[in-house]
Image: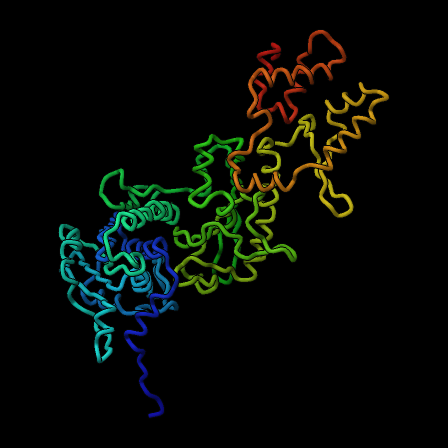
Length: 504
């Protein structure tokens, strides 16, 4: 024979499976994928703090597994990534159950039953295997002591699966004592988990008859709420045309969305649309595979020319949905954790072409504070500042043709040069860096024109501007009041101005 059998060390291999870099959020999401593939309608997640004896269960009411199926599922690499999968199958490498579970725990117990087979149980225990002198791949058929009550939830189900994670050394490292601080840190992660699952599985959760996920309870209050990154329920959200990108025998479906500017939203709406990670982190592409979100806001390393696209404040309103199927996994280089995706080159080029326009429009709406939306900008909407490039440098200049500024300069006559000197002083000292820093660090605190002013202050300013524009007429005309209301600084306060001056 010109070969030899060279099996890997059981202890070493199982320890290596823990090193894929899962977080609690990504690990639980990976385990939920198995429940969805098993056609579960309900998933119950329980996290219990008990110091070094803390534990987690993920239970579902899916089709379950027979003893033979369970034994196969517990094998590392139980299915090849090259195998053809059913359309709804969210698996990839046949590793997720093991890598996700063992990334958090040293003991993985799975109990499952189908509508026609009794409860079957298997357990990987890393401490048990490490303690063997033979170093064999011993898959145990019994749970750890006191595990029965943690698995009991499945007893009253016709079918389903429960995954029990014990000896949570990664989550509970150093928690030898049951200190309140360690307990609080453990439970604090639940809020983040709720947000993450609501984002990753929002398409499933949007229809309660399709899927419900509960965390630490079974009531309405314990349900994970879906978060739609495209905020389509808001009328100011602007969906862009759908495009389809062919690649071989597959098709990638793409649709961009431009979210409303902050000035078009209430504070609650702004916070909701910002998502779990905030506005800047959630810009870019959202890659879905079988309705499951893989990438939640990223420009995928794409570039236009020599500049790689990065998360920037002025593109934060741009979000682009990308739908692929599980037969495209290899082409898109989907990783084991299903959190990274890289499009094929021809698809990437088409994505750049499509996204460039979405980014451009999102930037315009961001710059114009959402005031123009889908309609053409009216010439009379006067913007005071103009952005220009002078000798290769970005500069900001007051528009001398702005109706108020123009009339002000005309009235000055021979003293016009004095005003020009003051204007130049203002233009040369615009605190660009400070404005940019404040906007990036606290975008929610950015004020709109006269946003912090009282009604009296708005009326006083409008009166002064009307005086400049009406050529000394005793009473302003409806036309000139309308012109004032179209100025950028007053466009949010039309009702106040019309009411005060009696215009229609």
